[in-house]
Length: 196
Image (tube, rainbow, N blue to C red):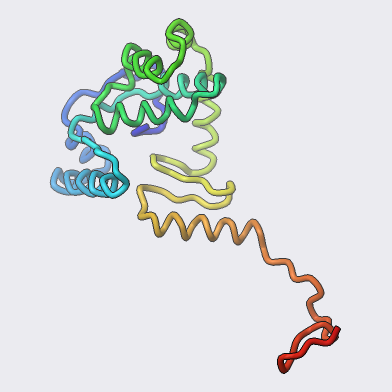
């Protein structure tokens, strides 16, 4: 999503120009916000994604996160997340609105009656609140944010080289080289010969 989950009582869709909202949110000029949006759009294009952030309709994503939890329970979490992301970043769908969420979820194969039951009630609200608490405990204040092995955090949209380096660092830390037989001079090779 474009933001961490909002409280359920906040407005479903934010009003106004997306560039102005970004500038106000991060205390930057409109020109800087436009440049940031252009960078994100260009980075997305290198991965084959056709972002249209000028159409983005941000808002309260609490119900979207509840819907993702429901989708996980029926084995469709990844499909729903991908559809919501495409809706938001490419199509300008208002993913804070229940009708939009229901339409997008049904498009990826979720049962409409079950989706509407989730959206009309408070199912999975505790799961989302738990996610919010965990994010705060990890120091996450925005997205994207990647947590690797619960030991490394990568904030923001980073180049693929940086992500690869972070993944390698996390892997190396979690899987240190274990020397077997280290220090046994009778089994080491010297001068192109080995003692057995």
